[in-house]
Length: 388
Image (cartoon, rainbow, N blue to C red; front, side, top):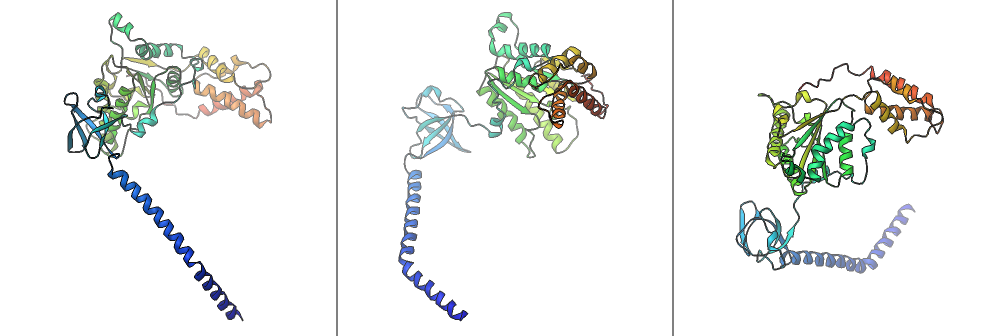
C-alpha cells in the first residue's frame, strides 16, 4: 500500500512537470535575455566614447597640449576639451581621458588615502569648549599663540619680522589634558584638523609607513590651513640606534620621513604640527631641535586651585542633593591628575546608583575619592622624568 502511494505521487509530480515545462522554459529564457541585455549595455559603455581613462598631468606643453601619465610607463601628449579650464591643468592634476582620442574631458579631485581621510577630525561645532579645560590656562594660551595665531593672522608675524613656528610639543604625565586641549582646538577653529595616533602609520610592510606620512602631509598642504596632531609621538619618535630589526627599523624610517616633511614645508605655509607625549626623555634630539619643534609646553600635575576648577567642571552636570564640600574633596586628592578628578565624579555617580538614588550626596564624593586614592597607591612608583 505504501509503495502504491509512492508510485501515485511520482506519477502526479511527473504529470505536473510536463504541464509546467513550457512555462519554466519560457521563464528561463526571459532571465537569460535580461542578463544578455545587461551585458551588452556594459560592453557598449566600455567601447563607446563615453568611457574614460584616469590619468595625471605631468606637465603642460603650452595652452592646448599636455603631457599626461596614464599608468606606469605610459605617457601621452594630449589635447583638452573646450569645457576644461586650462589654468587648472597643472602638474599632478588628476584628469579623465576619452578612450579613443585621449582628449582631457574632466578634472578629478585629488586622490586621498582612506586611512588619511579617517584621520580628519569631525569635531567642528563644539565637542570640547575652552571652558572645559580646567587648570590649563597657560598651556591653552601658548598653543593658541604658537599654532592658532599664525594660521588666523599670519600678517602680524610679517609685520613684526619673525618667522611663525612650525610646531609645538605637549609633554607631561598621563591624564593631564594634552589630548583634551588638542580636541578643544579642533572644536573651536574652522580649520582642517588631522588627529593622528602616532602608531597608526607604522605598517608591517616595508616602505608603506613612510608613504603614509608623506600622504598625510600632502593632504594637509592641499587642505591648508591645517593642524596635524600627533598623539603619543614617542611611538615613532624614539631615539634612533645603530642596530635593530623589524619594527624598530620601520619606526626609524617613519621618523626620517617625518623629519623630512617637517623640513620640507615653508614656515609661511599654513600647516602646523602639535605633538604630545608622556615620555619626552626618549625622543630623538633631531625631532626636538628649533625649526621643527619651536616650543615645548609642559603639562604638570594640577595644583589645588586647578583641581578645584577641574572638579567643578565635571561635577556641574551631575544631579546633586545637599551642599558638596568641594574643598575637602580637593584636599584629599593630592597627586590626582585631571583624569582622576573626572573619575571622582564618575565614581560618585556609580555609588549613588548602587544606593538606589537618582542624585549624588556629599558623602558619595568623599567615598569616591577615598576609593580612587587607594587604587592610585597600586600604580607604578616610577617617577616621571621631564629632563630632555
